[in-house]
Image (cartoon, rainbow, N blue to C red; front, side, top):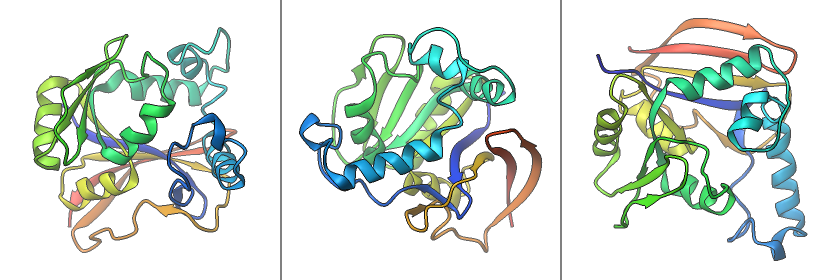
Length: 221
């Protein structure tokens, strides 16, 4: 039986999943780290994601050392990883991650990158191989489903790619970690959603000390 197609993101209380577009090229280059725009972007991003950084599973997966918090936040991080048999992402997310991920990228599954470029697969230590698909979101998803087997496919991001899959009716479920932070501006996940086509069914809401985890099934309206 084929698994679900889902996404999971952190979101600010006013509806943003990231600050404004990355302000410079080579964002993680050492010479750019003193740029005030870069520092502001990183500060907002860290604030949005701060719920996951202390979790034991997150620390283990990125090899950041022993220890860390355990509890429902940690369980959700682990469950999200364990259910995922393959991932799909957009080229902009890959470009940023290629600079930031450690050599052993944190996916440990096949990842299918939606792009207009042709490129050979990029294999990383630890089981992650990036495959580059240049003929659209549906072929990328088809390949991810095949690779995932009976596990789920996660649309990892970024926001524009997630929205494409939502508007195409290809998402079965999604989860939001609603963080108690305000951005005021940035990238809205649902800016441009085809609301006349998409209906949501609440699955669960789980508040923790750090965030509120909201899960919805997606139905065609």
